[in-house]
Image (cartoon, rainbow, N blue to C red; front, side, top):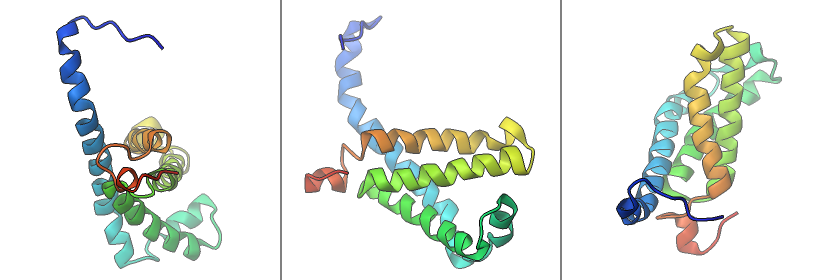
Length: 144
């Protein structure tokens, strides 16, 4: 790939210097948001049983418990950048299920699914790129 031509070439060092920090902030905020949204599910792991049953997941109680675990756990792993790709993959699948739930099951279309689509695109970014900057994966010299 050739280097992109910037309208203001003098900004290249700024973009290059901030890229790692911004990517780290995006990963950390994504993880924190998943944790904040998911921790209440841990307090009531069977609370989403009816919702997952309405999508067709059986046994619904098992899937409700998995949802209660996956969302905050993948958030924590993304926050610190440990097992980043598997955590981001799990979060992406979870978010795509919420897209289906809002778009199809609740018939809310794009407007009901917009946030899930946005968050799924962020988690998909980390499936592809991994934790990279300021991550436990990088500090260990390992990444999936």
